[in-house]
Length: 407
Image (tube, rainbow, N blue to C red; front, side, top):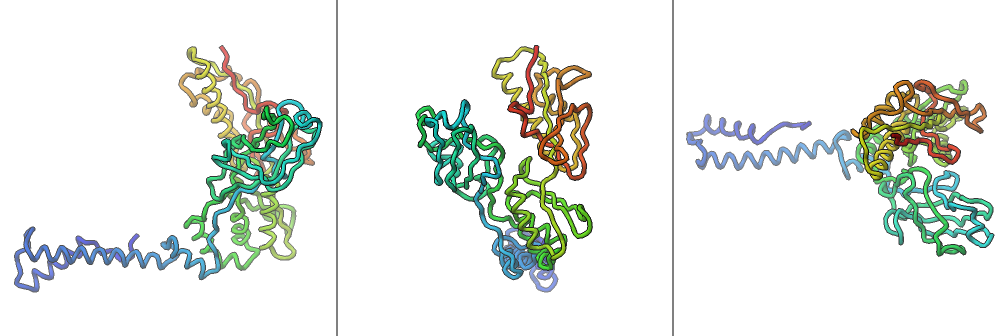
């Protein structure tokens, strides 16, 4: 909103009144000399007022943008966050080499495969598209059929982030069966660690809260420290979760599951702003997995390609619904049915009236969190305050969300 509202029309009106009241000039019709001069002066003054108003806006934190906002940051000792590449460690268990049949030894004369640093992995062949580079030498043991690797994007910024299963090409050929391209690569989950230059809104928020964050150990300092870690979408604080002198910080990431490296990075960030005698723990929510099988009945016959498109659309819509559930947000079976039915007008019904889904299971971590307990889900699932429902990601080699078309 302008600080000083002086429009061209108002300036023109004020000048015309002054001239007509204080001079002998009386001809003010369109095209007259007096009116033309007043219009020229009004336009010039209107532009001057607009520029002055803009300059005044930039002089306050709420309205400053671009380099003017940087000046406030310099004054408060807060730098704008720059572009960052996406870095994936092997402990993230995301980017992996694998073979579809047999083991690594089977495609390399019984020997392990050494993948050196510097090899390219990307969304397209010949290093085009979005590319990542291996950063350490990795040994793929001869007796195994998959191995996770550490990579970093070739470029920086949010444009290097990719969806699940998009990194499927590589330029490594130093193994016996390379002529058949039997060594495959993929990413098991989305990659969202690439970071663009920090926008004005987020930068302004950090500047405005800099004084509180400098005090350390308060909620604002802890929150800001966690939010600047790449990959963190939001955090939920649980004070005194393990007794006096403790708090837990639950991480919300841009991906359904929380990687170990993200937890480690957030832990280091909050440790730097926590007072002596306070014990913080950064962690992800307890993940409750969901799997299901459903049968689609169509209104009429469609081609094989249309059937494939319908199944793909239904699977995508249901997966997105589940994986976008927030911490402590309820899983509702009727919402699944709604997502299925809204995918295509060709779908007549899902399952039967009393049993819309052929099977529906939940996977709850055991007490020691070293295993998951599968149970048939007969009703909506309402998680606890530190639990989040996702599509089960360790589902015994099968597709966790499976829909099929029946006659």
